[in-house]
Image (cartoon, rainbow, N blue to C red):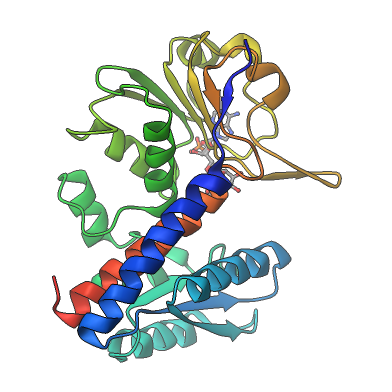
Length: 289
Ligand code: NDP
């Protein structure tokens, strides 16, 4: 039987509608307008599209959005002072530095400068630490969106084996941290695989939940998936003129119980969670929580 297709677009639309209502209520109660500033360095076309989508989503939800577009030659020192100015601006509640940054800029050095209260991507060590300890301030957007998608399948995650492919700071590691916490959509037993993992296929085959985030087109094939598993495809790969995920969708959907498409899966949920974090940031900075 063919898997349930987890419709990220529809799920994200429902979240965005709910967030828009909360933004409205927050504005009328506090007179604060949540404000996200995105910093985009250079002219990578994919990054420009991502930022534009995030800005549009903000505007639709009643969140003010500003774009700081900087030339590719911007130095690390210049970027640090721009982020510091945004940190000091009480009218800005969330700061998003679009990755990747140009090679001459140390990404970690920049992300570390973002004020933890304005760090709506949850990349700052303070926010990562809070996530690890199970008392998050902000949840990382992509893993948070994925957790909501798993919840939408009604699969009981407690005690299940989740295998995550990829150990990046943005997806793999924080995903593992969310799934090992206590509570709804968590309590899983988690394995993280990476490029040095041995017997990767065998490990993935034992998974009740597979989360593929390696950036390798159609890497996860049907023979690697246990029948009935929930499969979340984070990958975004351009092959010729098509966008494909890290999962071979057509084959795997015949084995899995639920699967996310690419596009229209994890991407839209990532944006919805960014809006949620921006509203939380505005609430914290307005003193209303
Ligand atoms: P990174 O490149 O930062 O990390 C990739 C990870 O995959 C690394 O840990 C790497 O291992 C591992 N890996 C690479 N090749 C293999 C392999 N053959 N077998 C096992 N592990 C492997 O990627 P990101 O986490 O930033 O992104 C992953 C994918 O998800 C990309 O396609 C990206 O575009 C997409 N993405 C999508 C988002 C969305 O909203 N939909 C958001 C963020 C990312 P090692 O550490 O050993 O090198």
